[in-house]
Amino acid sequence: VVAGLEAGADDYLTKPFAPKELSARIRAMLRRIRPSAQSHQRLTFGDLELIPEEGKVLRNGDEVHLTKTEFRLLCELADNPGKVFSRESLLDKVWGYDYFGDGRLVDVHVRRLRTKIELDPASPRHVVTVRGLGYRLQT
Picture 1 (cartoon, rainbow, N blue to C red):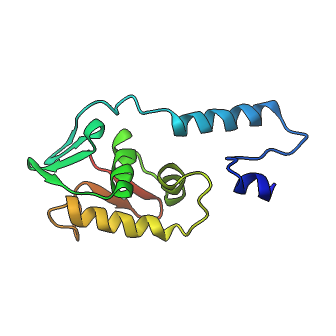
Picture 2: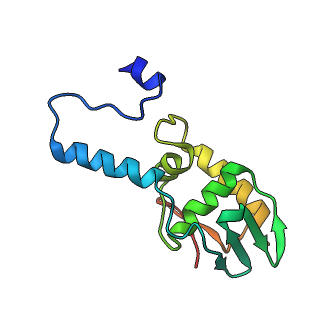
Picture 3: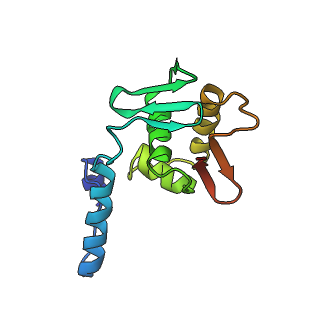
């Protein structure tokens, strides 16, 4: 099992297994690799504009330079504005299913993202913490 995962497998299912579990795992993988329906649109959230196909973020018309990870994190939140994402969910979607790191990594990247996109990172208006649950993009 370990050798298979290290060789590049994304998942492992032991026998006997339920067909419903296999189907659910396949659907989950397809959701992760399927491009978002919104990926070719400009998304606007107040003074923030996200242009996924160009890899750009604008705040008040000025380009904000983000790392690839910060951009993926913002895109994930922007795909479902208003939805609360847990740290674990963001780790899975942004860093990948096989990432086994600390959930606080998400906190660090959210903090860095806020310093770049928020006018006042101490009182964020866009990427908001939902205490005990995670983060959401405020609409």
